[in-house]
Length: 132
Image 1: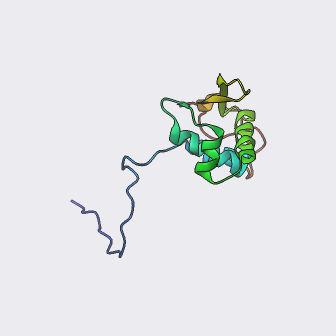
Image 2: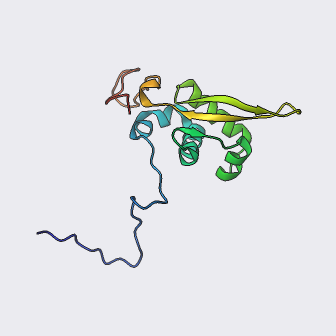
Image 3: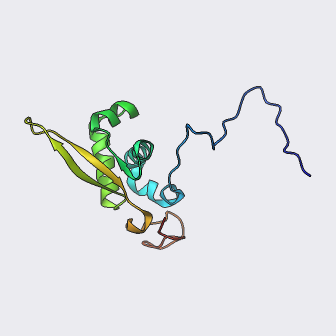
């Protein structure tokens, strides 16, 4: 029986299966992240972290504060994700001042618009399945 080789390192390496981690679809990183830019990427990552059963409720201000970026960057990221049909939003509440908060829905991969692979593939073609 093979024993796992223990590394003799002066530091500890994180284990990806620990409970304080989250994961997101590889398909997003393998094509869609380039299309939605860094704003879409960080917003999608934050929404995954906040999501419970595909639904997240963070405010724009909370996302901006958490990610250390402007509200404009958060809005740009959300719009890019919506344009690719990766997320959907719905107005949840509205105040007397006209402000509201959104519900964010993380859509399953077969809902996403086809991604352009920034390699030798033609526009609209995506390797792998588009379902979860």
